[in-house]
Length: 455
Image 1 (cartoon, rainbow, N blue to C red):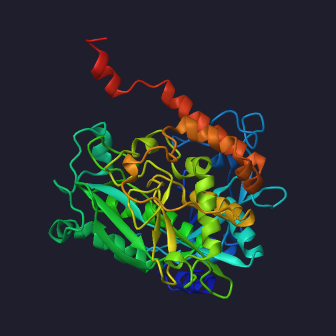
Image 2 (cartoon, rainbow, N blue to C red):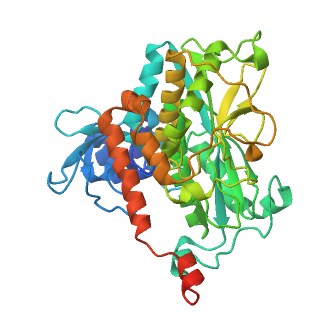
């Protein structure tokens, strides 16, 4: 699914003075937009074909550290260039930035011009191609939750991220009156995304003070991942423009709910036939859907890293908080890691509730598809759905409790190594190791307050 805005539209807007800046962006390992701001005249003249970036952009941590231990890029190799190839199907105007358009780029090897295998967009495209070769495509939708603060990013930083003032003082789940108070930001987000070619369904208050959710229409897997990356960047830019701040941390505060990114997924034929739906099957589930969901469950621990990539991600998995702790499936049950939605209809789908709002959508979608494809290829049998409160369930499959355990499951996964390639898994294993190493040597406020006097 492509944007309706074309390079010819851009040329016209540039010639008539409506657009003067084009953002050419690649998506980094953290799911962020990285790139250059082009003078629009130069972009439409030549940069729409390709541009370049330092190859370290696909081998840094969230602090932009030049992390050692990567095979693909290092000081020893000199940190050369990658080629950024604009995907013009993603070209769009950005209404919240004056005179600005944006395009997402594929990341190519500077010498061979082949896609860089460990770049997030390439990883997802590989799994999409596997499905296409099987005569199928995936539709996905990712719901995004975040917290809205009345301070600016600059004020939050200056305070050391302490004593932050949330946009509301109480749980605002579905509250109309409270969300009316927040409409200056949330309306700007909805209308801005809509104007950028991302069809918005709704926003709503979520299950904690100051917590919001934005929902957009489903799309094919790659288009939805593109939307997700633009949404996160756009929400931050719009909040900043209003003097507010937003966080997509999975768990920003011990006393607050976590923020999730629930991922809805279904498979369709290339001719738009819903392959998960079978009116004769129990709940309307087809045998193919049984196999796919069985794959998700069989490889649940192995793919968790791509749904929860940071130390903080695992603080979200707490009983009684609408964040799952068990990797089981259930029928319309929000305590389960995987929830059946839309039963008995063409819209039948499985919702993965494991991922947090801090995930990289390309990596998360790719991991889910790889697990589901494995279930289909090996005709895995689906276990019976769980019934009841999964938080209290005994002797059932658990979500890894720490980044360390999730990283081990990922690196030891034969399924992921076959689907992504050894070099890709080794690359992200190093990313997980570095995140753990950095945390292990830090001193937290909790440790100091707990032990300063009493230890």
